[in-house]
Length: 207
Image 1 (cartoon, rainbow, N blue to C red):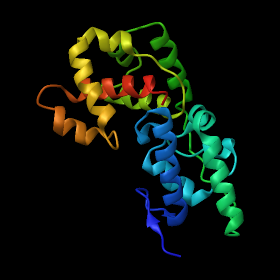
Image 2 (cartoon, rainbow, N blue to C red):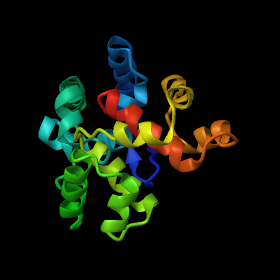
Image 3 (cartoon, rainbow, N blue to C red):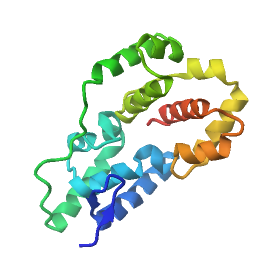
């Protein structure tokens, strides 16, 4: 069987990958969201490699998490299960599970501090993190499907017009990747500002 390579170098089932991309497009159109907000390409590639057939298994895919699996996942696991049965596919015995190193306590603390509306730079300082590391943790929290609201901080550093400008880019973006955003918006905004508005956008879009 021909294979496509994922970013992580894993072989994926190209027929299933194509089916999942079509399904993502349909779901995104129905909900009025950019497709990458539903699931990003690397997550679809993992699904086409490990064949999750329950919502719980889907939640273990990197970039999905239980929140997104419950919100969007039932149609996807139904399609995967049908594909596995129709093609008599033997699924990998060991499902590829996201490894969650001992970062869960850090992430719980971050969520609590954000709920209390502590400025993000203060959170980073108090936890001994670079600001960049803090944003990585926040993106991970979002990826896992946990609701998070950083509007209080974004509102403090960018006015509404600036936010709308960056927001509009991600609304129209095909993939929602940061590198393209940095190229297109980098003359007017810092990487941190762009990244923060992307987090706000994804949170509000139900990421």
